[in-house]
Length: 163
Image (cartoon, rainbow, N blue to C red):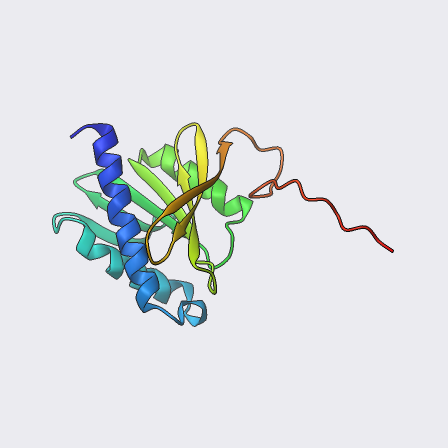
């Protein structure tokens, strides 16, 4: 299997699992992080071959999917937008453990989409994924080495004029 095909397959399994989780968890906002992480892992299970292990809170990742020393997927998540510290933790984990695909997400309760962070060696992609259809809109790509600011997205908005 080519690297691109493998990443695409892992990514698709993740998206389907998260959409399944979000369809069934109306009160995820009220759950503890540990309980929600466990339920997310259970939602991912059907989308990965039985030979893969799915562990939670392993070596710093919220969810780690692995088999025989190979880790195809590391998942980090937050109820709110990822902080700079959380983002750096995911980046460092990905580099240190040579994970095939590292993803982080924010469910964004009350919205029709969730925010997905896709990490590669050079870039972080910020993607809105429709919770019902799975349609994706890339919001921003940011170089991993760009650490000028702790802000997630840099939108150039004008301040309202004061009267």
